[in-house]
Length: 232
Image (cartoon, rainbow, N blue to C red; front, side):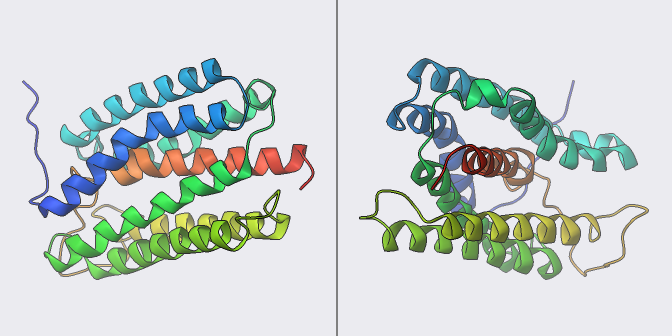
């Protein structure tokens, strides 16, 4: 029988991650519906993310990355890339109808849940070498997205440069989090050796890189493809 384990996380961290997980399928549905695109398509996309989230919850609780040894490190990049690859190959289906950049950029507001890493650093569960770049970076992207939506709330469309700003900051944050997370975790590639073991991939924080980050990257890709296809 598989043994399940989780981080001795702060209750607030568990509530934040759980709330974000519950939000993701509905946000996908709302993005397609309120953009004036196909509500049916939104339900399909939301349902797919619901199934992916359930799978990643099991992967996280069962500590599959650790069980696979060095190969387990590949799970993160695979999870990050795969949904967006599907989007790329079927982009004509996803973008058959224009999508609102307000909804696409708005998803990045939820990046503020990265503050969970700072909460768990304070609780002694995650090292500073990862918690600060990942947590502060996520908060920065989330607040910039909020600022963009508030500043241009009365405009017909978000300016192209503002959308690009959110995309670029978001990508830099992803790269930074992956770099410090990967190279501070136990394994042959470890170059940072913090006093606290990096337990980021344990539940509930593990659902951020295993599910919520791929979801955010998916919306980044959707926003970028939409930006290329439509004039703003």
